[in-house]
Image (cartoon, rainbow, N blue to C red; front, side):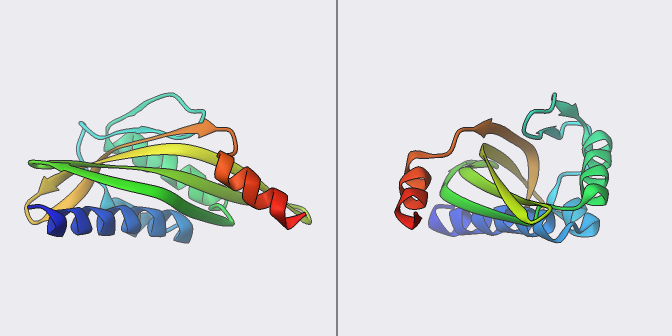
Length: 142
């Protein structure tokens, strides 16, 4: 276990966000546990129960156009037996005409060891105001 498993969980988390950035349903399917116990809360959405509901939500999100960009920061990983979780901040940018709008979410991703790979079993992202470090960074740009 230990640091090796932490790195494997971070790689699984990275695959999740890459599938999201790419709008790739096959990759998203491979990241998630395809099981009724899967749960998902997109920012501002109610809880989705089970892989089938989660799969439909991703299809709808991807059809509407994946985010222009999503950056992850403040990533922290914890492993306990066959469960692991990653907490992080998502910075989501969307193009609206000639402007880019930014939104932030605090995210918790829970993974379960399935065979020899970590699979996402819970994704919970809640909208948050701009993190203090980001506000200071943006202020320095002006």
